[in-house]
Length: 90
Image (cartoon, rainbow, N blue to C red; front, side, top):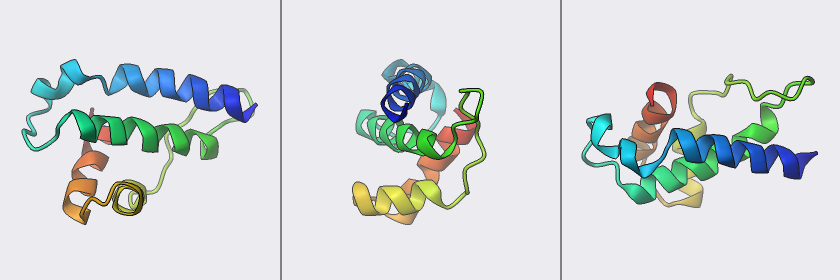
């Protein structure tokens, strides 16, 4: 089940956070690599967001992206916070 959740989540987040949306974000400091980090972190979050009926809900804590991206991608809190904003507003 976890493999299916991850595969589905990656497809969803690859669509939501695709490169052609960069210009519309209004955040010139967010680049293609940042969207990749966002897709990866959001995909992993799906393991914690799986409902019994199979859909992915969005109830993550506000600290997740800054914490995860600082450890995994070596981003500072400010950039991690911007990715969090893209996740919630994107």
